[in-house]
Image (cartoon, rainbow, N blue to C red; front, top):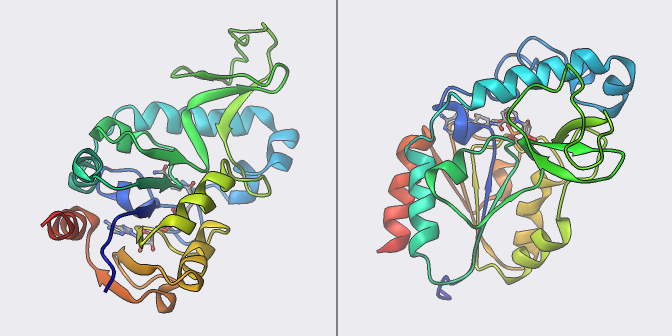
Length: 232
Ligand code: NAD
């Protein structure tokens, strides 16, 4: 067996579930009682910007009250101690990886705590509401939107993600349902490259059969256990 030097970790909503942030598919396909089409698409924003802004304002405020859990802390510890390459690719728009202390984090679906000005194309750190249409701090236009990737939009930094996957010896997927592409396809890309693959999830995900190994349980237990093992 080749020595593991480079690791890519994909995280999804399941890693933040025990911090009190709802997963996406938990409640019968609804996301906090909204259909995805009504709040997380460019079409929804064009149709009813106030509704979409309010939905994200509530979530932006809520995540600031949440705390990282033992799974985020364990990955931050791995990030601090792992000598090889490591990239935590997260589908999450919360900032719990960073608040746990991780720095090698890539937000492929954007971040709740950033606002994107569609006039000047600058992304600014943002904690306040957007529904009252505040001006962009850079150009003054009232055209800020949440800096999150909606369904139908291109995830961020795919080149960097595929480059890391090409160099990885191990691909680990944590707390993700395997339903949202392109992230759901990373395991197949990894397998084609001969990379080892491991899934850590509460239950078997849709793409579970693609993984060489699946460990099932709450992230706050199985992630620290795996990190301890890999650091031995
Ligand atoms: P998902 O909701 O589709 O799937 C979550 C997965 O996590 C499920 O397979 C579930 O079994 C598992 N899970 C639930 N609780 C768990 C726990 N305690 N420990 C381990 N696993 C657990 O989430 P997804 O695959 O990330 O896709 C949803 C999309 O919605 C993403 O693109 C993401 O951007 C967005 N989203 C983000 C957040 C966030 O930022 N925290 C929350 C909800 C949705």
